[in-house]
Image 1 (cartoon, rainbow, N blue to C red):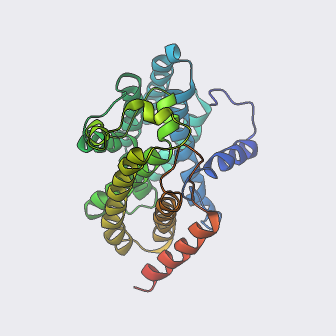
Image 2: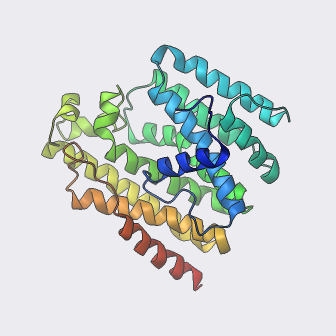
Length: 288
């Protein structure tokens, strides 16, 4: 987590690229024009800052630090200079693309919620959390590419929720160690799981059943959103979004290949697999 950075702009970009390389999908692909990569990096830097505060800052300081981010968002949208380096980078992108304020506020709200809500009873509850933690990113991306249209928003929300659900499956053990469970409580009980199952060195069969259920829900949402979203996009916007969809599909395949044993080892997408799926997806929709 970087609140005040001594790095140069190039060093900062390289640091963001290293973080982005750990994601399931290409955040700001090198093939994209600089104007798009710059905007995507600025948004990713903001999202990474807020998530790192919510997950890694000392617990007693998280609310205060998130308040500093909110204060800087006030400055950004009032046309004043923010204090934090990530917000200063974001400000140029916000004004150049006329990005709306609400999605950024929602990302902060999601991390505030993480400080007080540590369990979710139903899948609908988890999806409600994703509406704050994931869907806003897709809406920002649509604005960045200047393709934000009502017909595409619902599809984008489905894709982003799916990507978040996949991460919940992959990171179930880490989330539990951090005091949170994003797997629905009613599903855990249905499969006979106790919370201590998330602390085991190998994923019990009953917990794998829960993870397979959540991954299946993610796959359904991903495919439901991907078709209309990609069909409604053109050019670089379609190319970038095809990468996100490809990353989600390959991550789901990684979970299935690993038989959902997320506690024994990381189940992450294979980079060649993402690239192959990306080329197929972009080519398929590019031909339309």
